[in-house]
Length: 238
Image (tube, rainbow, N blue to C red; front, top):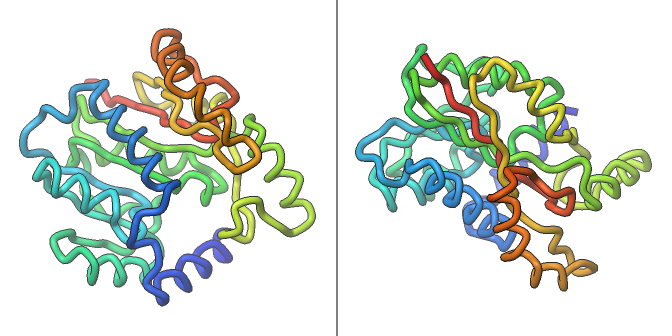
């Protein structure tokens, strides 16, 4: 399935896709920024950031423009890297597999990853690589699609018939926060933050509950099953 997903991304890159912001990406960006603010990362000066599974570099370019950080985008789709380089020449792109990153040990202060984990059959390998490239006290912020939400259950059912709820991939891997915590067991600190409510058209009224649920989640440090994706925050301690 990994190869099929790569082919899907390559085709999108040839069409110049995933350069502009969609509603899904905007809401994921809000979650990413909330995580950076929760750990005070937005207040830090010049840092090295690796965006793993960067696609065409929307998040990389945003962080570069907002914080003036040194950001490198990494993706396994050569076509998306080329598309990103054209759209965001200020960002350096590296085409590589997330399970074998072409970076030296202890080279990054922050690793971000949005929309990558669902492409991986064994995310533990990528968490090992993220741990390797992070400096001591470095932080990783990784968005994961929630297997245990309503959308996750529907996606699992549709995958059995060869279809997908999101209409982009030929199917992908789904993980619960429990399995992700196990995959990230090489890290010293693991925390979770809700990212997006199920906001497909059949659940759009639930968006009205999001502010209250986000506040509750922040206090309880738990991810309600209602979230269709969440961020896992990992820290490499000495």
